[in-house]
Amino acid sequence: MAGFKAAAGVALVGVKMEKASAGECVKVVVRCRPLFGKEIGEGRKKIVACDLKTGEIKIQNPKLPEDPAKQFTFDQVYDERNTQMEIFEGTALPIVRAAIEGYNGTIFCYGQTGTGKTHTMEGTIHDADERGVIPRAAFDVFRRLADESYVEHAVSASFLEIYNEELCDLLLDVDPDDIAAAKAREKQQALRLVEDPSTAKRKGRGMYVMNLTEETVKRPEDVLALMQRASTRRQVGETKMNKQSSRSHCVFTLRVDSKRRMPDGSVMECAGKLHMVDLAGSECAKSAGGDSLDPSRERERKNINQSLLTLGRVI
Image 1 (tube, rainbow, N blue to C red):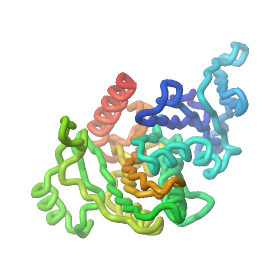
Image 2: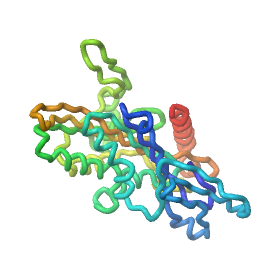
Image 3: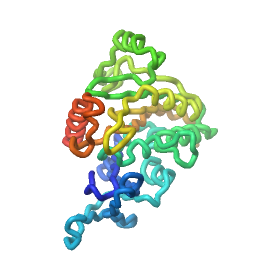
Image 4: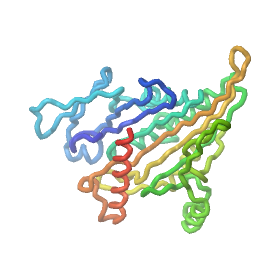
């Protein structure tokens, strides 16, 4: 969702949990960031008002201040007063818990470029207060698995990038500066989206990406190291609206397999996946610009907007 030019941007977080009841299947949460940097310097005014109790957002048209504000209602709303921890606990934590219990869940950020999606999903990973959803999810998963009732567990992670409609493995073990070697290995281990359906005799994997690297992680710090490694390969670029604009969609997945001893002495086996998605931001060519700095921006913009349009239709 995008506000007017004078408004602070709005980042949307969608939450989906497989096998959930109808009322829990999809939840939409809106986080509004404050004005900063260039916007403050240009004298922009805040025109977005959040009511955290009712989940309502009101947007005032700065060109027609006498008109009534447009009002929208969501499952939850947050503004600049809310911390990264509050966002995680209020939005992502139930989905993280469900993944440990054997459900598949997805958390994704959607919104215009420069609205704070990457900050919400990743944050500053080595700053305990400013960590985003992904690192906080990792810490919470391992904290819960440390409970003595879990007799066995295994956690693995993958990091997929979708850039210009092509799949890229962000955890591919190559020197990021050796472009030729990276391309050769990617060609040898081409990523393909395939389906492994279930049958009467076996449970299939469903839709998955063939040849995508899955690395075993034994502690949350391992996840932070993978995120740091992946950040050197992710596609970013400068536009008028964002100096570090994500030019691709990224899907970080934690697979959690566990065996837990129940109060009656039985052992329950669970296998769940937690997908955390940082989508590239929707863009308007006139507002974002950047084409003069890099001609490839136009192609990126078309692919980003087309994929986001398709996602909206699916939802």
